[in-house]
Image 1 (cartoon, helix red, strand yellow):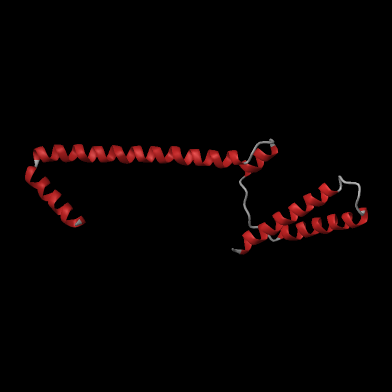
Image 2 (cartoon, rainbow, N blue to C red; image 1 turned 180 degrees about the horizontal axis):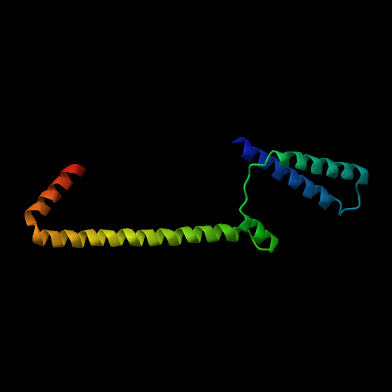
Amino acid sequence: MDASKQNLNQVINSVDKTLEILHQFSSFDFDVASHLNNFVFELDNMAKLGEKCHNINVPMEVLNLIDDGKNPDEFTRNVLNNCIAKNQITKGKIDIFKGLRGHLLEDLEQAFLEEVEDYRQRRRSKFF
């Protein structure tokens, strides 16, 4: 595991600990001073660990979705859907060019039968 992922995992663990401490505040049978000290320690720890994670880039679209109260997974879904759409467009272009190549070879074969046959033989020997 590289250092940035390890730093991020440490921050996530610190956030989890902080949330656990906050949850414990809802029960009334605990030592308040001890829990406050733990809470402050975890916040300080989270801040220190966060400084190590400065090289993590989050797209603004994700932050805007979070600000709008939406699930950031929508960003990932939209990116994947856009990639799929572009992939289908590219596949369509490839299929069209293959069809064009086939039509051109048919037309060339009618005009230049011997040359096209020579081309096909050279092409077969090139791949095999």
